[in-house]
Image 1 (tube, rainbow, N blue to C red):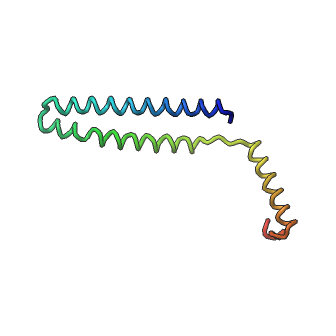
Image 2 (cartoon, rainbow, N blue to C red; image 1 turned 60 degrees about the horizontal axis):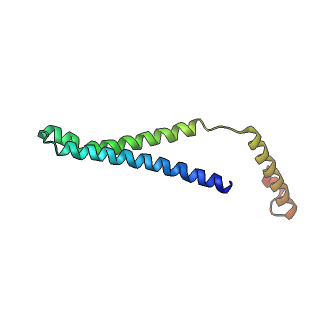
Image 3 (cartoon, helix red, strand yellow; image 1 turned 120 degrees about the vertical axis):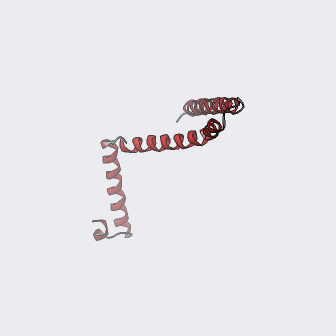
Length: 106
């Protein structure tokens, strides 16, 4: 990475954090206004649980996004071949130094 690449990554991260913070602040502002609006007992109990519901929903969404990303992780055949070549090179070097025997490799 160049220094400008790191600066761009930092700016992108800060933009995401600012967006998330704005959303959370807006949600809680609306929630407080609803709490102070003089609802009935049943409605008030439902509204009191909204932050918990939002937190659980966000957690489930996060787990779903991570699971989706892991399920569709891109395979890079060229990189896999390079890595396998480096592993064979390291194994042969370890055999030459006497750390591993040929039987341990296979």
